[in-house]
Length: 117
Image (tube, rainbow, N blue to C red; front, side, top):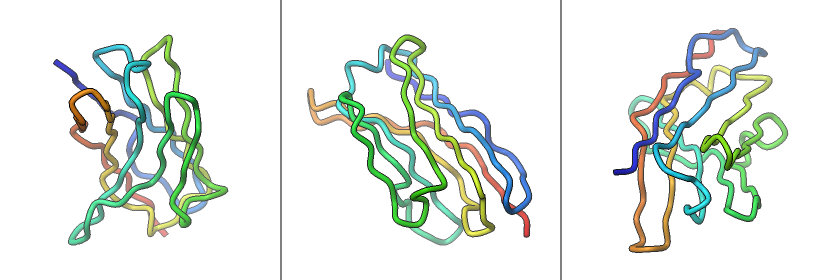
């Protein structure tokens, strides 16, 4: 069973930083890609950043230059370093993992990030 557990969310002032971490219950090198998504109240879940097994990264325009995604295959974690946070970054942040084997997508339970102005 694949479990993804996010941590690191919290309340921070605008301009501050947070580091989210996603711990997987299995070896992440088996996933073709992993990523972070976020969902604000009343809005759809949107992509924040993804990283492939080859360490290629992709970011939403709104976070480019402020957020950095990284993966540690030895620790089976994917982190999201968030700097220069803005109130509009407030959302529940979800970790996901994609496996081309069976075209399976896994999701974590989410962690709340709140940025005060």
